[in-house]
Image (tube, rainbow, N blue to C red; front, side, top):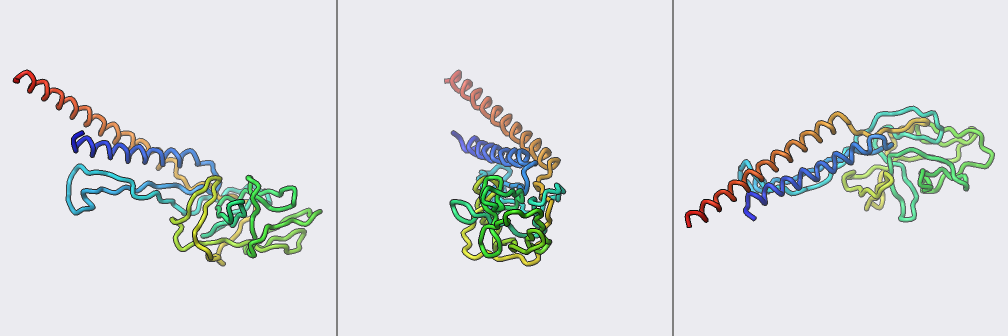
Length: 240
């Protein structure tokens, strides 16, 4: 395979990956707390200091946009939203994980848990247990959890030195290699509200069209290049 075809294929591979990321974002428009992803690519020739119209492309990183999504009122007292930087700490079988998804419920053990059944942890790293017979759960903006007007726990929002270092694990959970994340004391907790995905559907659709057109342009160029090569070979054979 000639170098031109290799370069074109590298660009198509990058565009295919970009389309996967766009599709992932669009598929999660309705996912509470979802953060849009962005694929970043390296231009190998230009990064080496050479200016050229055609270049070898390789994926460099997958970045996440951790900007806060819009708020949606639900009225459910166990729906929570963090206004500001930070993540809810969640206890899982794999250890503590972190999420921006504030969809919680109470399990059979009276613990506040995620939809997957993993407990929400308080500021002391302990599951939050609602006393039996509690009629009303109220949560203040600074994270105090009240059961029938009696404080029972304190919420916290954890932040990290580098959010991009967080590793996604599915179910809107992230893991971190940081042993001691910081607590954002300025974060506010909004009860009865959920943070929507920060995906801009118009932008993603425009990006999808752009990527699709670029992919088709490269495919057309490759087909034309192949046709020229075949014609040249035919002429050479006839001459010989």
